[in-house]
Amino acid sequence: MKRVCIIAVCYNAFEETVKYLDSIEEAYSQVADVELTVVLSDNSLKNVPGELIEREMQFDYRYIKNDNVGYFPGFCLGLEEVDKDEFDYIIISNVDLEMSVDFFVNLSKQSFSENVAVIAPAIISMADGRDLNPKILTRPSRKKLKLLMHLFSFPYFFRFYVALAKCKEFIKAKNNEPVLPDIKKEEIYAPHGSFIIFTKEYSKIENGFDYPRFLFGEEVHVGEVVRRNNLKVEYNNTLVIRDIEHGSTSLAAVRFLSKHHVLSYKFLINKYFTVE
Image (cartoon, rainbow, N blue to C red; front, side):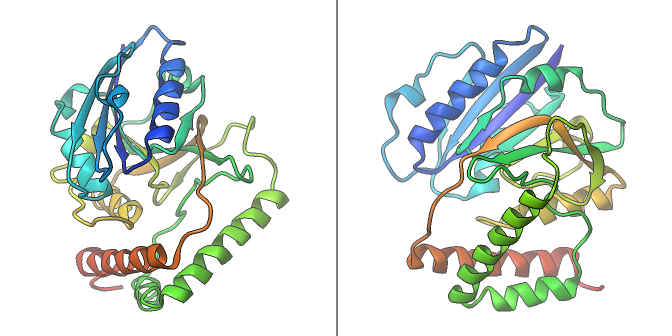
């Protein structure tokens, strides 16, 4: 019996959350050898629909209300609701996702080496079909992070950078063979932050989940924690999540996102990249 805990962090995305929970329930209905707990960690500023607070599920479902504390801090508040040592896998996720129907079936069949601390699933964009993983293949340099920190301090550059990155990813996806059904497993530096699977080995790391930034940079934090403990991040595309991508972003939102990218880069540089 595999024990799995998903902590889903929500911010004003109630319709997406309902669909996400529906997809989790459908996937869970396909297995008999998985015990599942789902904690909805709600950072929303809007009033949450009652169906999300009192929702009846096939598994252990819990709802908690937070202030708008951010992504990883919201995850850590959700983690306080469970005993992390009880689970084989702990998952942090956004809610604008859908779980493939065979996700738990495939997860229950997996066996990972003892030095695998983090699993990066295939996260397939529903907009263009590309896989958002592997997110970061190799460790970034201090020089690169400092450059991005500087450039992202200009909101218009940030908007341009995001648009350019999406264009490059789209072209790459069109030029490559489809991710599925070919099975691919490889060691990488860091997973995409929207859905990260932590194994027991990661849970054993003291303060491994403590990332105090509001948004962004959690991938690098996880990659550094794993690297410093001589463990591994494994990309595994037998596990599939679908990503519901958002549309255009307002200038006010761009300024907010740009600001938090800069603050997160500064934190990461000071904590993990003090020297090359």
